[in-house]
Length: 480
Image (tube, rainbow, N blue to C red; front, side):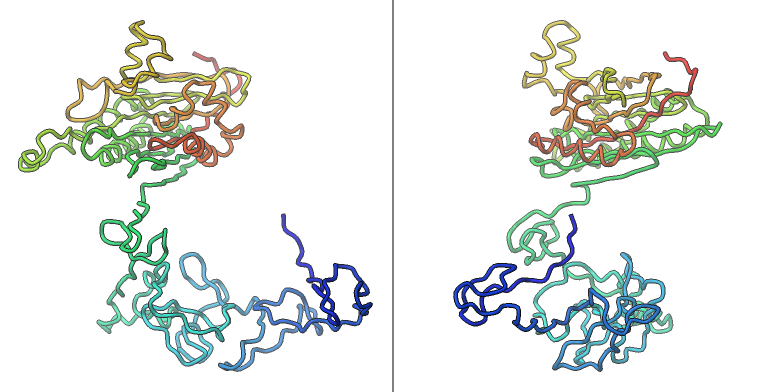
């Protein structure tokens, strides 16, 4: 909760130095009149927080900035006078940056020191006190200057366009070395490890979030794996009659295979693209799902086409492989498709109605339960439970994509996830308890919550989850 700033009370008596409490009018030790203590000298904040005397019809009359001086800090300035940039480094409206390099212009120094190529640019009047000692040159930049990518021709004058006739102006400055996220001192080598503390740096795939229309997905490396071998694709389009359609595909790389991260990435991307191309053409969603899984399998198979010499050096490596699960929500229809042990759950908005699991695992445990040899609890407690019997890959058995269609009679959300989540919410009831009540209105937030649920449970595996809202069917629509 925000609070208004309060003036600090006296800590001790000015006469005898005895501690006093807030609100005391006289010192309890010597009787000194505390009300006559002169007010403390006014400080000089970077930005004035309250108005001053001489306010005009358009606001307070701020003092004019004094000339630059190395002996005294600059006076306060109007907040509107401070130059600013957006997240991309471009000047804000009304604050166009000049390129003259004169005193007080952005890019110049109040002490006559011109910043070098490795130093951050500090606009004059930017709220930084220039009377502080210069920073040591050995400190690396925490992030590259965003203006480098926008205008590499002139760093000292970021608003000045580069000179196309000058060959030197087109040279891109060398990017500063990446700094370790753990010790903030060491440089990161080409392998992604800190040269100072040895800490592995986060990769782009360690945590991914994405929204597309009403659908959202989140993927996380988890707490035990050294890389994220999951991948996903989300998207939205329209059917030929203009009806909206949303989709989500989630893939889990098989860790015992080679390049599982490449397999999951290729499968999810190709499956998503196939659905986005087939649905607008009028292909039935269930047929489109089948075609998407077949296309994803072909993409993973292609990864195994390595040179013969590569196979000679590693003859016992398995081909790249992954699981796949996906859903399409369109025209009151809920279509699912899968190969492997990633799952889809249905969670109604009305939590008094039952939730349901819409997929059956291609796994050893599922086969034992289906054959009546073990109960579900016994099968999934076995160490062989997660041994999959179906996957995408060149060394897989005959491809048998599973697809199914449903017509829910109420609104809810579809949860598409890898076993990194459902290991911590296995039954439909447990998943419904983990899904936030407002999941249909906040799918990205809900996906984050579900990933957090898995991490709080131990995060033993990569975690990927997509949340797809299912709108209430129109009045009079039947159910199947």
